[in-house]
Length: 153
Ligand SMILES: [Zn+2]
Image (cartoon, rainbow, N blue to C red):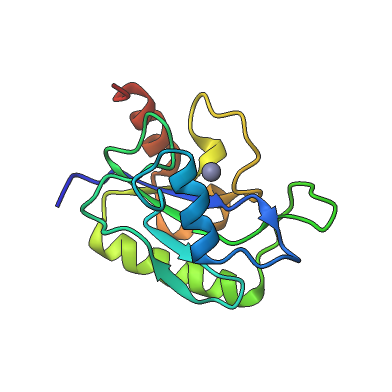
């Protein structure tokens, strides 16, 4: 397994009142030139977790940080007016938490950060404070983000 130092949380940046399924995600990422879906894991509104890419494969989700990270995306992130918002359903929150617990047991050294927490990123993604919400899962998230920045190729 490659060396994983970060678990990066994303939203799909799609409206929460419109389904955005795996086929659409796959089409959109392929259109952007990715070799399939760039995230490793995708969490649907109903809490279903879909593995889109093997963890061993480098993802395409956080420019400059892909080599040593896992990308996790939840469906949504925009409200019905198209504004950035934490649109996670209770089922999604539960599924995300369980998923992150599993990933932390696989990669105990990895920090959990939101996409926007990475240095140099100017996005709202994932539209909630992932470092704070998952603070209990990870003592050193802030350190992980700054370490990632200094190790950036
Ligand atoms: Zn993102």
